[in-house]
Length: 166
Image (cartoon, rainbow, N blue to C red; front, side):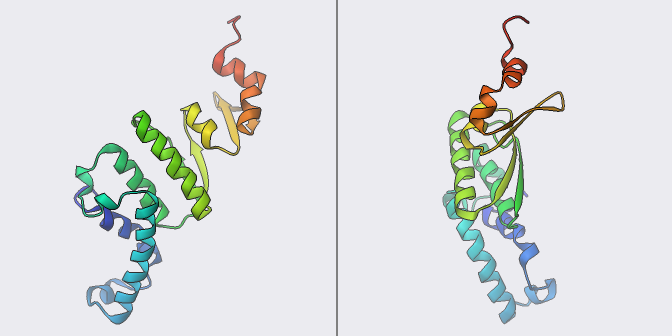
């Protein structure tokens, strides 16, 4: 929602947790105000966690690309998922933005306890943040284990680095 602010986008992510209907929300009843404050508290925690406080009142369409990626993560977190699928979250980011995103993903896991399934082609990123790695080659699983185990797997090495005889 490019025309809305960062704060508004994150609050939209909280809608599934709201206990107030559209009618009550529009009339600012006591329960609506109480619910808004509760939802805002969760959103403020996400804003702090992802270090986007400086952008809270900015229109999303005006944000730098890396900050938009953080906002996407934040909007997903606002729904309090038990399992979060991150499909190539590093795509299009420069090195500094990738390093920040790695840190934010680690912080989310540590502070919120959110389990994440990461689909990512940047192996440096994968190896730095994953606890378990599954490697696919043309849709077939060829390796599973810790990052260290996968990096030492001969089948993974042959598929991704070549054997020198190819």
